[in-house]
Image (cartoon, rainbow, N blue to C red; front, side):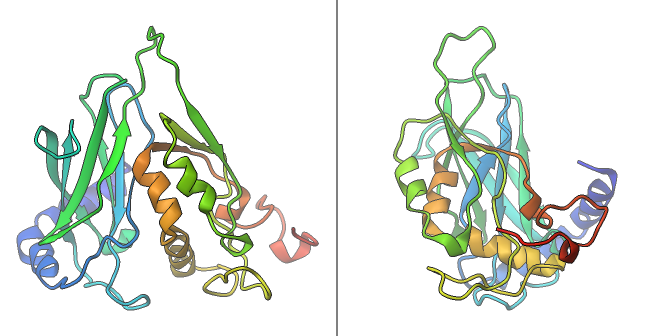
Length: 247
């Protein structure tokens, strides 16, 4: 956690009773339409993620910190709660939540997790820690890259979610910043992304895909970035418009 985020979170925590809970009470809809995810698995933990969304795409959530409760269990029915707590979904972070869980045993144990805001409960995700270095257990990975919303549906993720895997490794190209292209299977939601709000809306579009949500909820992911998470062929030495044709 960087210093600025820590200070911002600490300041927001002091206002949670007056601000976060008030905001949560005004959410008369399911804010978990982007699903849940886990990632960065370690020997003793992982990161849990969700992002709160408004009832109508394009409308803002309350400009306030929102308290998000989370639970981690060793069974899918949540009869054996291992850890639980609360996090703040902050407006400056687009009301996303990153919970860093630690203190767990190394794999092969699996865990189930969920989030709650007021009476709304997220879908249930499944995750795991990494096996101990001396473990002889086989590690099963799936490799993914370069997904483009306009190039087709993400049916491969629906099949992947049914596999017996330990982790998904994505080597970049989680989203594409391009504008709308004609005659595609489905369309991006804006012109080429050049602002923070546009990038956040584009990520939300990709995250809204139900098959991608299934794969995120089924396994922890290990992520790296690709140029399209910033701009195609970015190098910080010349404008994107001077780089010639792009694929």
